[in-house]
Amino acid sequence: MNARLLLFFLVLSSTLHLHAQRLSAGTYSSFAICSDSTLNAWGDNSFGVLGDGTAIQHLLPVSVIDLTQVVAVSMSQGSFALALTADGNVWSRGENSYGELGNGNTTPSMTALQVNGIGSASAVSAGGLHCMVLLTDGTVWDWGYNYYGQLGDGTNSDSYVPVQVSGLTNMTAIAAGFDYSMALRNDSTVWGWGNNISGFLGNGNTANQNTPVQVLGLDSVIAISASRSHSMALRSDGTVWCWGWNGYGVLGIGSNTDSNVPVQMPLPGSAMVIASGYEFSAVLLADSTVWTCGRNFTGVLGDGTTVDSNVPIQASTPTGIVFIEAGNAYCLARRSDGSVWSWGSNNHAQLGTGDLQDRSTPVAVVPLCEQSAAVFDRDMDNTLLK
Image (cartoon, rainbow, N blue to C red; front, side, top):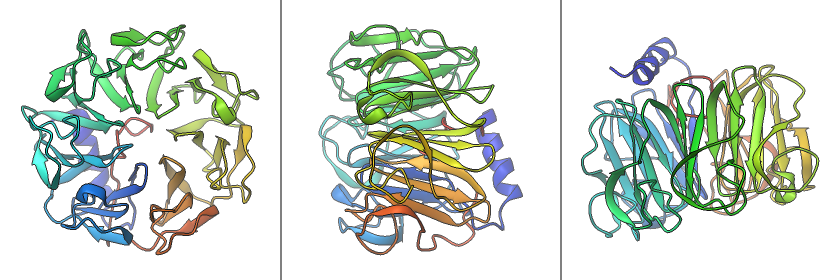
């Protein structure tokens, strides 16, 4: 069994009686995996992406009806989702305009479809209009929209089925940005490909790449995160490094100037989890505090205001936070007692609070599946648990 999946089952068995979960946040939709390896979902349900058999928006969590033995889930920055089951198969659902579902056509689906030719996956990550899968042999496979070269196969042609990313071996983690891709190698180096307009790829320029290039100046990386606007990496020493677009100060360095190479985010302690949203960043420190920076018009920085910040500020999270996840303009967090908290934009019920009201401070999510337990987030890459 792949080491990452083995770790999942070890953690699951040790926490079965906790009401705890890791979460997947997209643009307007959220997922959680229950301790029985089934899925709950809430928020926007375009193309039936929530998997309850309808296309109706849900203010509260509903059960995904056709998937079991789920070990990872990834909600896209669009209207489709990926799920990884314990047998190594990958399943997709929702929008399919560019072949995002990976089944050889462009027909959307409200039911889960098996992705063609993938049977030994260890991680999944959904971007804006493309998908990534990491196999147990350390290779990476992508499919979907490829205008910017985000599939990494040396072309700019879309693919409705998985294609192998050129030249990547011994990879341990993946992260799909909106229209670019990132991967972490077992030597702790980071590689990127696709759109590079604001320096998303961190290689010192802004030229798009249809094959992987190495992010400059980073070593000892243990986790990566990608979004619509910028990239993040966590090093083994607990420092956080960011690059790409820096509007609203999402890089947290005290300015609003883009950077096409990694720059260190100043933080008051050692980081444990990183999460990059559309126009904001969030970091969980070892002391369980959450620090955020960037655009705050929806209250996503969690400090009780809607004032932007280009340096990290402390969110008003409750004590005992052990995991965070960033959506488009909202955040989810899990406490050690298993409770889930959310804040930021809620225009499509993505906070799971039973209403459509934005929150500028964290509020408890309506209780999810009973006995939900330690589950990997959308790409299983942005935490120390790997």
